[in-house]
Image (cartoon, rainbow, N blue to C red; front, side):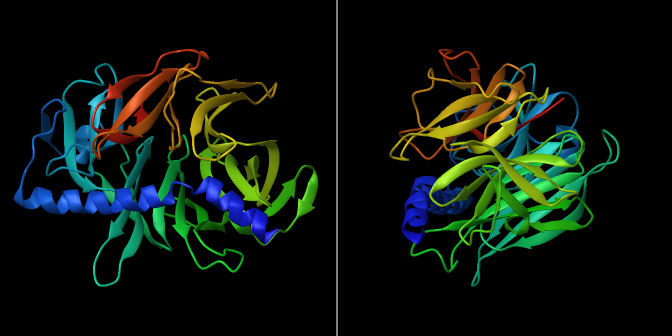
Length: 343
């Protein structure tokens, strides 16, 4: 099992070197920008407060332009995603937002590198944002999501040192109530795989997406060299697999479909796809020919968003793609990553 697991972790985290390299690149760009402010090719931005960013339907994101605002949280109007952007002084490695709540995962570099999740919230539109919670993370930030009502938050990080790992990284994923109690590490939840309760040492969980009832969620579970889509129940503290070969799920706004990335046989390329939860029908979005290593976001019930790094420079853009199988992707928000749609 250990051999199979190592092979699987190579599949899931085959891009970990790229991820770490991207983190180092981000740090280098940030340092360079202090002394050499480069010109971003995105539309001119205005520096503003997080409160001002929160006004009106918008897309929140992490700015990736090669300038002094690299890594800062910004937003564009939903009606004009390629237009003027507002940038804040909040800097995150990963960011997500819903209904008055923001989750910001950061790397604090120093003599000892630390990782942190910070939750911010506001009671009413236009009111001042405030930090309501914050926890230390055990490893490199990877994913974060917030429930539709803004009350629950998940964070996934890469860690090393697990006894079953010969090399590479595994994950830790935690769900918390914003400003409240934690449900703990999802690896500790009761796990049912293909109808049978199991307790494998090599289980990993990542890529949480929440339903609207503040109880149900979906996530990727990996064990024994395979990846599964699991339905989670916070009240029962359980995970039950319902499909296989699903990574980084994202529940559609109407709650009927899961967008995800599907790995090829070699685990070197991920294609965006959609799973109908009622019928089990999968639709591969073959119009996208690049490898998509991101947790997809829904723009609406028929369109998905994802970050994609450019081939010629360390800059990401947010792309949109219709869920028709052969639709053509397009850049929706240039110089951006970690999109979150706020209405």
